[in-house]
Length: 209
Image (cartoon, rainbow, N blue to C red):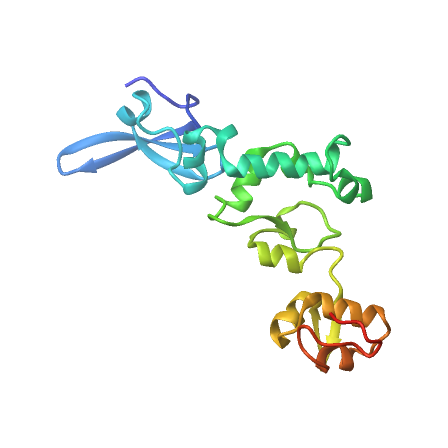
């Protein structure tokens, strides 16, 4: 049989042949390396007839849908634009203050996809440290509420020894988030801001919030 070593089939590059015996029959399989870095063993016919074109991992299956149409590709493009395209509306909050994408991701969507995996339904790309880069150890797929709690302009308040955002304290205590913001801006102590009244209460200066 003609060697397939070195041939490329879809995302697979043939590395070496392997002989397998089943009963009296001996057949040739091919160990292949996928573009994502994984290896897999494929039958000859599946390779040359195009039935197997990747390692089959969830990350690689996305390529079959057309990369440019995937949610993951859109997230990657948008993140790069925020960092490097001065014409996007929110560049000032990202690239304008020094936020960058790591070299591994900036030059390769495949690397981004391999590190992050498929995007779960309803989640979006988020940086854990809002002052840090888009990089494997600083990014996650997050819910809207997780993103909201992680915004740079969130005010973190320490109350009873716990540090939480005002949004989190408002949900926990049954207060309006705007109420807490207003009280703290007026110079109230954290204790008073968190304990006096509920929604619609009257502040000490007579202002209803």
